[in-house]
Image 1: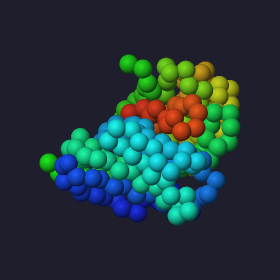
Image 2: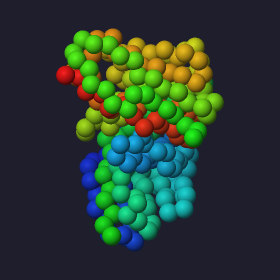
Image 3: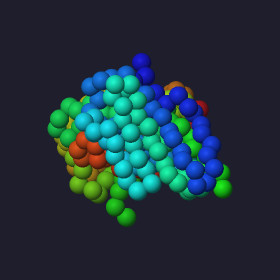
Length: 115
Length: 112
C-alpha cells in the first residue's frame, strides 16, 4: 500500500524553463510534506517542506504547492538549471509527537535539465 | 564537517555472514533512522530511535537489529545476511516535524 506516489519516474526540461514534479498521497492524516533531492552516490538532501495547514511555500527557485482536496502536491523549480539534475523524492509525515514523525517516501522522479 | 557519518561505504558479504553498519551524527539530534533504498521502491524505514535509549521497528525490520549506543551513534546489525538485503542503506537524523532529516552518504551492501 503505497501512501505516497510519484507516478513519473523521469522528467526532462530545458535549462531556464520550469520543472514541475508531482506527488500524490492517500493518507489525509499526513501533517507535513517534504521534498528531498538526491545526487548519485550521495544521501538525500532536504530541500523544502510545507505544513498541511498551508497551500504554498517558497524558497528561492523552489516552490511547493499543496492541494489537500486533491491529495496532491507539486514542486516547481524556476528557472531550472543543469545542477538541478537529480532524483527528487516526495515525502510525507504523520505526527506522533516526541520528535519522531514516521516519514513515508515516494519512489522518486529523475529530473534531467538539458543545457 | 558537521553531519551524519556512515561506515563502511561499500561492503560485500556472503550469505549467512554478519556485519554492523555504523552511523554517527554531530548535530545533537534526538532522533535517528535507518532506511534502505531499492530500485523502484523509494526509501523504506527499517528502524528508528526517537531518543537515546529507545528504538522501534519501521516498515521493513525483519533480519535487522539496531543499537542506540548514545545520542550520537545508531548502529544497524545484520545477523545472518541474505541476498534480499542487497541494498543501499542510509542513516539519518532529525529534530521536529517539517525540518527534514540529514542523511549520511550511504552504505552500498551486496550479499552474494
